[in-house]
Structure formats: structure tokens, C-alpha cells
Length: 174
Ligand code: SF4
Figure 1 (tube, rainbow, N blue to C red):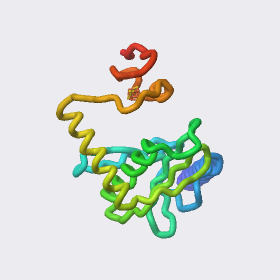
Figure 2: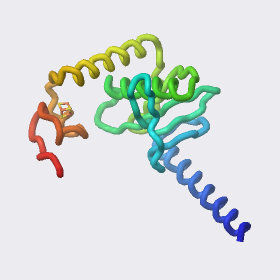
Figure 3: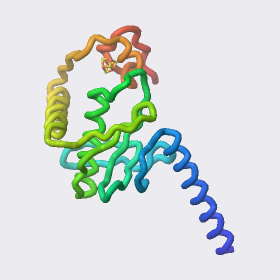
């Protein structure tokens, strides 16, 4: 009985590994030891009590001894957008806080094309500024629109809750 159970677990683990590898290959995920994936199996979010911030990168790899968060995006933009870069920076920060290890860069895979984004002092500073802005908005409740692109709103996951949405705003769900 135990042997059958052991074999079943082995086969299942192998199937899961193959499925992960196939997804990695399909999405253009760079090489490295896969430690975490949120695309094929639901994963625990990373949480920083200090920053009161939680998030789930699509993958975490071990590359050349470093922990590296990987975020997968698709869309009509040929290059990583500032919002993509800030999101990845937040994952770098969360990974540093939760692992206690230095995270020198993250990887953004845009339309199957990986780009290494250094988590350098400039990006760390931009992240701190953005978080400070977000905290201020939460404190004051005052939000200002920072773009005039209805296309962006059309593809925004927050559009049904957003009162500043440009273009048609679907009515909130139940
Ligand atoms: S729907 Fe709201 S949150 Fe989303 S992009 Fe438009 S203005 Fe920004």
C-alpha cells in the first residue's frame, strides 16, 4: 500500500514538474532553479509586516546564487512600462524582506521576451516614493488621475471599482 502511494506521489511530482517546465518554456522564462510559481499552482503571497505590503510574483528563480522574482506580462507595448517595473521592484523588496537575502534584480517577461531589471538605488528610491504616495492617498482619500489614456482604463483590472475610469465604466459586481 505504502509503495503504491509512494509511486503515485512520484508520478504526480514528475507530471507537475513537466507541466511547470512546459509553462516556463512556453512563456519564455529564463533558466534558473524554479523555487516558486503562482501561474500553475496557487502560491502563498509574500508579506512584509514592515511595509504592510503583500504580493505574489509569477515565479521565483534561483539564478547564479541569487533569488530572482519573475513577472510575466503580455500586451501591445514593445517595452516594459513604468508600472511593470514598479510592480517588479515591489516583488524584489518583498523577496528581500521575507528571505533576508540581497535581491540584485528581477526579470520582466514581456510577450515572452525576458528583460533583467536591476533593483538598483534609483529603482529602490522610486519604489519608496510610490509607496509614500499610496500611503498619502490612503490617509487623505484624495486621488488624482495621472494619465489620459482610455485604452489603459479599458484593460485595467480595477476599472469596475474606479470612479476616475476614462470611457465606459462597467457597473460594480455584487
Ligand atoms: S480604471 Fe482607474 S485605476 Fe484603472 S487605469 Fe483607469 S483611472 Fe487608473
